[in-house]
Amino acid sequence: MRDSVWVQWEDNAEAFADLIADQGTPHNREILNPCVQKLLGDVKGKYLLDAGCGEGYLSRHYARLGARVMGLDFSNSLIELAQSKTAEEENIEYVVGNICNLDSIPDATFDSVLCNLVLLNVSCLNDAITEFYRILKSSGTLVCSIVHPAFNFYGPGTWEMGEKNPVTNRRRGLYFKVDNYLDEKEFERYWKTRDGEKFPQPITFFHRKISTYVSTLTSAGFVIRAIEEPLPPPENDFFIRERRIPFFMVFKAIKE
View 1: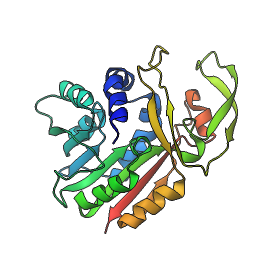
View 2 (view 1 turned 60 degrees about the horizontal axis):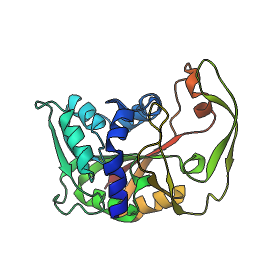
View 3 (view 1 turned 120 degrees about the vertical axis):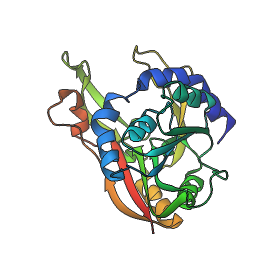
């Protein structure tokens, strides 16, 4: 992982933690997290790696469901924030580490690995997936989520917007434009805080084709058991755009 990417997350740590607010954004809570939990299955009594844990809200969630959790992130500041938000009695160990190289973790350590919205921010996709395979026990589960590569407004596409809905305070999506999907490349985007201010630093993203993720998983030895494109609950008008095209893609893969 490049030093410049590390600096981005160090400088953005407080803004990111404020945006997550101990529970994730509305898109996390209503669309992504239920799908991830379904694919992980019952975690009680299992050893789970939260790879790229950020400020640790999912580490805490799965520890409360009975998992023994290691939360790992390469940002010292995010790990410090995660530790500050976690009660001593919660069964979580936080570690500063790089998913591109997990040499400090022995082979066949974990029952499950969760990599939630991380792979699209790293250049080392092959190394990370290979390491996940190595540290999983036989029949262990990897669940990884990404922003949908075909409908990613941080990548090759964008919404053509209409007027703002006064109830949801979101602009109406007229249609989604996609171009240069096949062009895998690196780019930077600024996230915004809850107050609409830019994060202190831009965030690096890597656009990849769906087939790249699939071939990387299978080349490492994984058997893909599920690929899901979760939808929001139908009764919530805030997510009208997300009911027209999927916002996320989630993979479940098994080490066999």
